[in-house]
Amino acid sequence: MVETDERTPLILDAGTGLRALGSHLHDSWEHDEPFRARLLLTHLHYDHLLGLPFFRPLEQSGSLLEIYGPRQGDGDLASVIDAAVTPPFFPVQMKEFRGDIQLVDVGDEELTFGSTTVMARFIPHTGATLGFRIESNGRSMAYLPDHQAPLEGDEIAAAVRELIDGVDLLIHDAQYDEEEFAEKSNWGHSTIRYALEVAHQGNVGTLALFHHDPAHDDDRLAALEHEAQVSAQGRSIIQVLSAREGMSIELSEQKDA
Ligand SMILES: [Zn+2]
Ligand SMILES: [Zn+2]
Image (cartoon, rainbow, N blue to C red; front, top):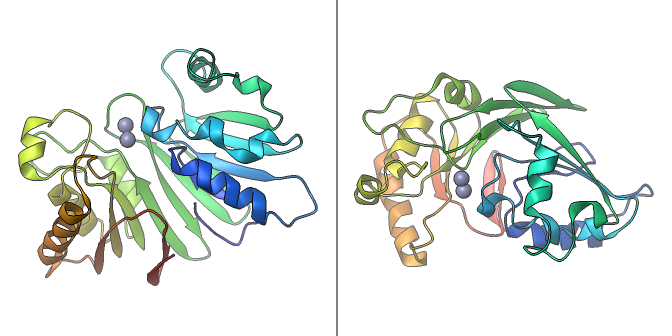
């Protein structure tokens, strides 16, 4: 989740972490008006969508979740998500939740939520996938959790350059090491080395390595984080870290929550 001066929470994707976040938001909502949140959805792969039906505020009538997700080639976003959240995959359909869900089809465009601006751009992955750049109060971050590195060379797509240019924080796909990428180079993801290259060329402040390979345990991730930090020395990136569950990052300083 991204916290800004806006009262309405801004959530990034709807993976399994959405269940715990939903409970937290539900318990800590202190405003007089009904619950409201916005969710930026990069794409519809399961690992980015499975938490949606477990988002607790949807159990309450009057609550509203606005979802901004990638325009699909055929069918609108609502019909595609309806087809995923329905029996026999889940006991109820989206329309049966007590809370309201508004789905907004997004392409290459800019969105404005109060004093927060969001740039959305289609980026290389598999299927229609957005990356986001979020700016608020003079701070900026980019979120590219799933990004296909080029099969050869280090070219960076123009859309990606726009999203990441000079951001304080870049959360970027870093699923594979070089050996793994050689085996799975067209699976839609990046290497840690390519994530560093993107961050370097984009003059990014902090790079958070993200979308870890499920086969990497904590020790392996710590070793990869250390390697990345060594590789970043002498480059323009100020800080590299491996994203962890429960971590919170303030744009000038970070701490474990
Ligand atoms: Zn994906
Ligand atoms: Zn993914």
